Image (cartoon, rainbow, N blue to C red; front, side, top):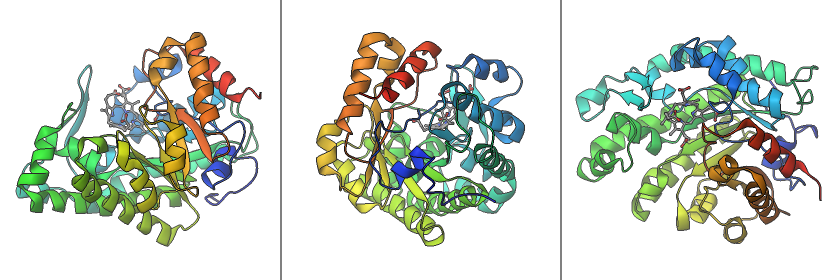
Length: 359
Ligand code: CP3
């Protein structure tokens, strides 16, 4: 029923994830299912964020909104990286104007309260959403401006380090100082948390694939906060374990890794983790990175979301520069981070047109 190993020529994103250099490159945008869309804001009034994630009707609809409107090559599941800790029993609330608030994990007792056995039951509606999306995207009907069968379904999780940041801090932060201090001052506790996240993340991603995700992405948004030794320990090593776990069960399913702000360590991440595609952040120079990242690893990224907010000629010329920098490599056009909520919809429409122009 699910088509995980779809190599059909109609899926341009899947072909690129499989290593083919396509021109123009396929595209989707991080946070494309979000507040910049009026139809998303309309749904927002109806239910809180966690309810939207956990209701297959709503999550399916929100995932499809940017596909209908723009025909993106990738549909990313409407969910969040914090669903996994919440599914293990950590308290989670999304507070307007503040972001996520969690009951912070600071001790062995806090950690002992988490129950990974709950994940399968709690996330069942998320998996149901993926199954429905797979069916819809692989059905015979067009989805708005998207051709039937052209869109690749992406599952995702956070990477262990980034999820640990929110779990330990109890919410968002600029520096995640409490988490980074814990990694040094209480290495046994921090390692136990990381081991729990590594294992549950791998299992949850496999479940997403079995439910219908055609490729998966690991978001390590805060990887770049770590010094090199810790980047290897808490970013590269767990990512490699997760990739090995997934590949042992689903050898053909492609994995995108996003070691945000990883800088000079991104090529090592590309070489040593086994991910198929590395998502580059806004500050990475594709022209330099393509020579440092092994040829068999694809690239994703990395237009500045602020260029899309600004729009116009500045956006178009920067978008074409990013597109050209990836030419000849397996490259997925995307942003260097999520689309800004205040971005005008017209700018995104113009971006899609610009990237798909053949010249
Ligand atoms: O469109 C998509 O990309 C798919 C869904 C998605 C969401 N979050 C939906 C969401 C994805 C892939 C994420 C990833 C995510 N979530 C990350 C990694 C990527 C990144 O941005 O660095 C992180 C760090 C989170 C944690 C998170 N979730 C924060 C910090 C916040 C609050 C800030 C914000 O952007 O609102 C969220 C909430 C969230 N996740 C929303 C959405 C659509 C907004 C909720 C709302 O509607 O109010």
